[in-house]
Length: 388
Image (tube, rainbow, N blue to C red):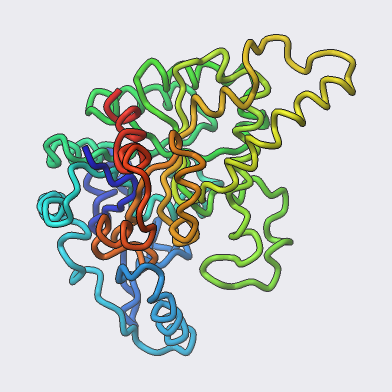
């Protein structure tokens, strides 16, 4: 069983309008073009500041093309990129994408939303609109799963803030649709760390409905920085340079907190899936966390958390699977031998940094790895989550 752990389905222009609660259509996102032909994600007729550009998968070799388009936009010139309505069908059509899996030699694929990774941060101060549009994607994701005929594993989308009952309702909807992954953000939740016992009902809901919280790199991870605008002062790029390199810090903080403060002890079936934030950091975290936990316990004169029956590192090794889909992972194939039970292949199609022929191109870059490691990397590790 070969599973691609990171692919993206572009949302049709009016997906949020078509799949939201009909009473909330005024609160639905849209993709609209400006006078120069650039497509933008909009809310209530206003741009969210996020462009809906059409990439060309190239393993990261075409970033300069996006830069040229941005330069044209800043100069007030018409776009030179593919119009949104003319993108290849395999980007947005589930049936065509399913047929492409056969051409690529891939059995199943995890499917993330395309723009769900972009719009959540601009809507952070509007929780109502956030929920309306997440609900729309979740309904659409269930249809993608049906169209995939068992070969697609769409990723739902939830926010952990504000309304635990809403989270539970959405997880139940996703579970009934056969979905086993739900994107959210590792962060402080309503002023509380993720291990706070008042959040235990959320983790119980994830495990009850057989869904793994999934942390794909996205701009919402800026929440980990108290004043991200100060760190990024003067940086007007589409992706901030300074904080953008360190977004995975949110995952490291959350996992450390959840391990040492008992979340994985209290919820032994909880699994966490990360995507496109690398994997080397996890090996370093595991290597450092055990000794650090012991040092802190010694300094305190008592065990830091008597509730734990295992080492914090053991909890992490039981709970975490990392989808390796960004070029920085490709050039260190040794990480797959170091973390054979925790890494999973992702082609990231059709992003610019993604691969046009995901499986073939990925294998060419990483070279030969032992058969037992390859079996886990290319399917078994993710299968333990999405087939649970």
